[in-house]
Image 1 (tube, one colour):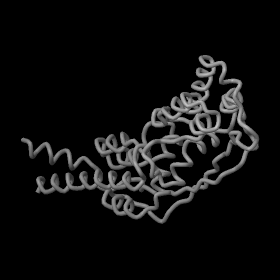
Image 2 (cartoon, rainbow, N blue to C red):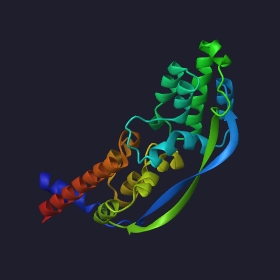
Image 3 (cartoon, helix red, strand yellow):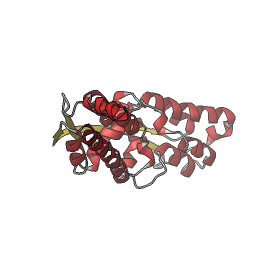
Image 4 (cartoon, helix red, strand yellow):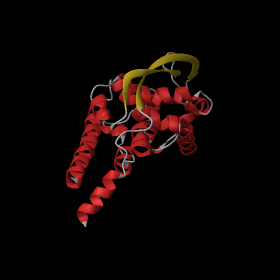
Length: 242
């Protein structure tokens, strides 16, 4: 009975996707906005109206430019209020905002702005602090340039091979950018696994990965292990079917 159930389950899965997965890559360019804040009230006010590309830059650019070597998610807002204005407690509040909990940049913007406003309500004296000339918070905007790669796959085995070869920029695009681009707590890989290959459990595993808690290379290693485990399982199932 157990063997029969395995055979039926494995035969229902498409071995080849109807829509291939095309790997893309992206580069993030910097663009100065001319907007700057010298005080906390100014920072909160600008946070509410700057382009979303600014929110992205100051919370994500560091991760890619340093290949995400530091496991603690940094952001420029936390650094500036702690190191330049000397508001260490607020710096801790801002550093503790979990980027993973926010599927949109608008939500992330609201989290930073409201945290600063709440702090100002509790600590009115903080409104009087200001950065000296040259140490203001300068808002920079990210401009994404997205390009297709030569990698396009239709099977899980092909996906594993391509995943081992793509650049970390491509991995970043499909894991980090996907969440904000789609406005969902998932990524491009998980969606393709589920919608094209019918691999719901694998898709769920991949969607639950926290990309902010790992380096890009360790993320690649984990993904490859998950995919290989699924390939091994399918091989076992097919062997049982025979």
